[in-house]
Each structure stands twice: as C-alpha cells, then as structure tokens.
Image (tube, rainbow, N blue to C red; front, side):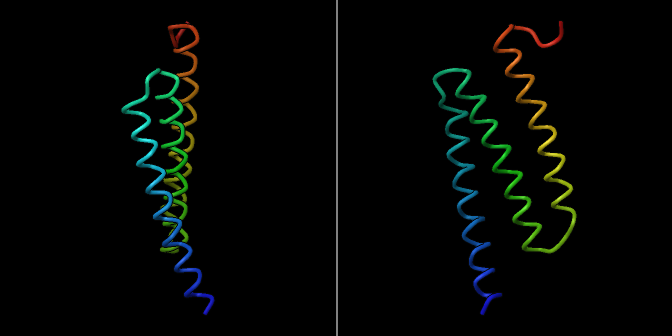
Length: 93
C-alpha cells in the first residue's frame, strides 16, 4: 500500500515539475524585461534540480543526486553573474 502511494506521489511530482519547467521556459522566451528572463532562468534551474532529485528517489541511484548538485552550483553562479551584469553592465571589473 505505501509503495503504491509513494509511486503515485513521485509520478505526480514529476508531472508538476515538468509543468513548472514549461511555465519557466515561457517566462524566459516571452518575458518583457531582462529581469523577468533572469527570474525565469532561476526558476528553471531550481525546477530542473528538483526534477533530478525526484528521479534519483524514483530510480534509487546516486547519479541524479550528483547531477542535481552540479546544476545547483552552475545555476547559482549564472544567476549571480546575470544579476551583476544587469546592475552594472559588466561582469568582470
């Protein structure tokens, strides 16, 4: 009984995260300002990281957890670099 509920919950979570990724992609493509696009990119990398974590729970492998760590680090650096670019117009001083 509990394995069935866990499987259904993971399937629902995967669907919800995929839908959130679609909405984030729409925000990136159709954002009226650059700040909206950066926010959509930030949301997209967080949703991707959570999708990989959910897949790791479902499959029981450590590969997805390691990939989620890499995605989170690269996403954070990209968000900081884009925010600095939007504030000052340059990344490297």
